[in-house]
Length: 444
Image (cartoon, rainbow, N blue to C red; front, side, top):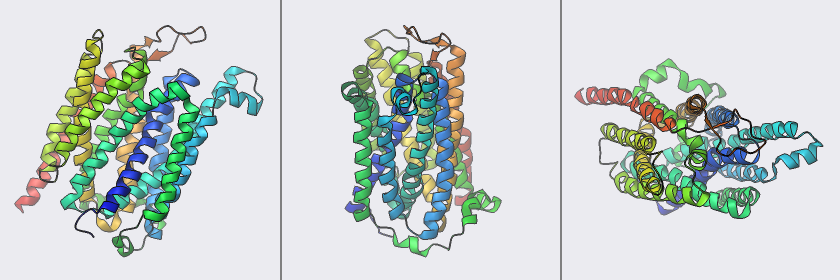
């Protein structure tokens, strides 16, 4: 393995890491808003779509990780995966109630709406299948195989900022672009860019030499990460994944609903929430990048305490300031959003580096599915369910509903931030155990 991360590898990380996160952000944020705004104002449908996507991502990553291990080829899976991933994003440009009525010759709007919802949710799972194969299973394995502990924190800090830049582009830029050009044009443009990146990958991606030395893989190795002996021999890996899972659940309590919240509860226009969201993300990313470069010099397990608290403080602040009057709301809500984002990025940086450090080098692909269970499946199943239960309980009605809006519909409530912060703090107990194991190992 190289003793440093070369320019070509950085280029690969920027192309596939950033574009992958932009695609995921579109799925996790804009698809939710797309469904809510253009098909049906239903948080239940949003929740179901997020949950099914999480299940799909985890199952696919388990299988794709083992297959790419068996074939000893990450390059082809990443490149072809991105090509098809982009095509599936592009297809969303043509999904609408009116098109469904025309294609299936359905005059009843209610029936057409139900079928459109079904098509969107199914296509979201199809898109996730190729995205998880390319990004979650194979690109993540590629990063682990092409980095080492001495510079892994630096690489991980950049990868951890990508979701925020993606959120900035999607929540900010996409909101404005959608207002100007509509959803179809935005989906077509993004799909084309992702597909072109996959074509480029065929020429610039190169697998690590270590990939050829891994033990022969069998399809039965799909259950490798569930074996009690594996869990016992890699306690710190699994405990770090538990931290990832708790943190992920906290994020998914509010993240699928945040743009809908800012639009319908706070009353922000697309430009207003873009500016507030953008300022918080840019400021938080700069702070996190500065601190992230120090992660390789810090005791990562102990630093987690601090950043979990920072993340929770940001969420509590967002909850407490949600009812401020404008224009103070813009500044104060955005400021606490910045605090939340600093904690967000650095938790991702530290846990990501720790998980890669503890992942056995000869079983990287086999364990990507286990990572997905904690980073995607559990958060995307439990988080939106908790968030939507809170929204349903608070039952805040749609502001100025149209004549056809159901009176039972509701919008996201600020309490999602409060509960998310409390859930995030639960991870401190697990971090304590991780630190205790580290002290015991050092004492031996």
